[in-house]
Image (cartoon, rainbow, N blue to C red; front, side, top):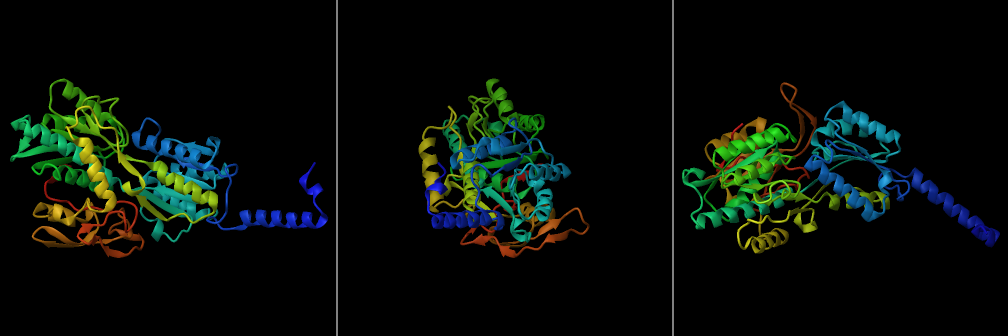
Amino acid sequence: MNILEEKSNEESLVLAVVLVVSAFTMVGCGNKDSKKTDNDLKIGCIMVGDEQETYTKAHIDGIIEAAKKVGIKETNLIWKYSVSEDDSCAKAAKELIGNGCSLIISNSYGHQDYIAKVAKENSKVNFVSMTGDFASISGLDNFYNAFTNIYEARFVSGVVAGMKIKELADANKIPAKSKKDGKVKVGYVGAYPYAEVVSGYTAFYLGIKSVYEDVTMDVTYTNSWFDPKKEGAAADKFIKDNCIIIGQHADSTGAPSTIQKAKDNGATVYSVGYNMDMLDVAKTATLTSPLNNWGVYYTDLFQAVLDGKDIPQDWSEGYSKDAVSISKLGPEVAKGTDAKVAEVEKGIKDGSIKVFDTKSFTITGDSVKATKDPTRGSIIDLGLDKGVVTKATKDFSYMDFSANPPKVVYKGEVQDTIKDGEFSESTLRSAPYFSLRIDGITELD
């Protein structure tokens, strides 16, 4: 029997009013307050790659993990794979809206402009541009950015690499050809000379130096996020230059697999990957990989939407919320690496270790010129005291650099990024903005 038939007329009337008011509240509230259930929340996922690309694979895994955790059916996740960074992104977003998606996520920085345009035209739909950098100054209240403090995990992976270099040095197993001016050579395969990449490779380098001081690092760019052949070729050049460690901010297994082949042929060389455990492709060459644990953010995001709560417009977390980590340690890491990693991770969590402590690096000579180069970042006022950074003022406006001269698209604040003796990364906005070029690192391209 229907429940309403068992109630008095008065009770039935009250219940009916409550149901009507509840339905009106869910439909009539703004995009942040509307409470969704696992049956009616459809999420559109615009991915720059697919499961073959490690960066996208990490996002896919994080989204599926978060959906399960908060009770969203996997059939309510609608996927668009290998979406290029052009009008294809806007088209994909509009198709997802047509499919009933009220939350749309894109995972590539290059999607951001197109997502913002569609967000402006569809105020009832929430849009998240992962790794983006202008949501908070866009004037749109349905547009959001998120990132992780991956630089923390980069630093820890550098510590792992530094431990290995120290072990080899202590055992006199570093060939003379693997040194330059008495310093051990390290290579790094980067995608683009963006702040995201610069922040990561600098953190990695500082992690190495926190264990073993006498190192120098060269960085080369593939000008692509995902290109196994270019990444493998870049790694091969570093191998031929006798680098002991090769790190990467690139999204394929091209570099680690190349490094493993060289190691199998007798080279003294090890790999630090990115985004995934590389042990399957580099069984003995792999030391570790820094990881983004995207499921942490996506769980927060999905739960906020389901609960009708505000979505943070700029979200970034690191070790303190387990949003970053490193992968399983490889079989040839130095003895004591486990304990050292635990010590460093604890220090990052409690604040006793600061990744970009200004006392840990200097900027002199060519590094000053590179840092002030407007094509390499937007540090507009650099203060130095015997090479130690005392000020690094950045304009957080979003610029159109295709215009001549570049023009402001969204006006942001001018702020000093140095706070209490450290470069304060991912606090003034979520996306990385560390673009300082420090001594000891050379960009080859």
